[in-house]
Image 1 (cartoon, rainbow, N blue to C red):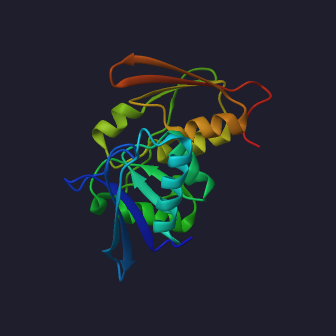
Image 2: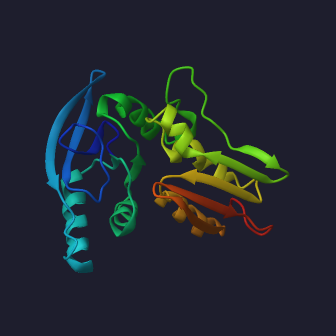
Length: 213
């Protein structure tokens, strides 16, 4: 994996957009502590292409990325996300412009420890609140409202992998795809409930046999 390159799914306004929306994948290269635009690739999923077409588009995107295996988008889900994960890509869900998060993502990818890389100098990563023994709550929507450069993966992945909970309630604007992957891998029960148009409650339940391996 080339950690000196980071790909960003961008809209015409220069901000990140969901992978499902038409835009441009821009690969940035870090040279002498400066980020330079390396290459661009217009990308738009064809809704009517079917599974074979989606696989073809995913393959084209992976081929364009080359050795770059770090990609940032506003959100990611579905078969394209799983195809990228299968190819060894780290997909980050972050809202904002590249200059707001490239250094942070680079540091995390370089160290391979997302939770240990601070999003902002001197800033602590929020943790779920224990509302009763073994039961925790956190609002990703509230956190990202104050700090949009922070991803759900940065905040929650270590906590989810550690498994020291019986129930974790997460309020977000969509179900983060990485949580679905981790829930299946670790044997957690996942239940999602739409609370409002842009608000979803995700509940993870960890049975006594569950937890991090």
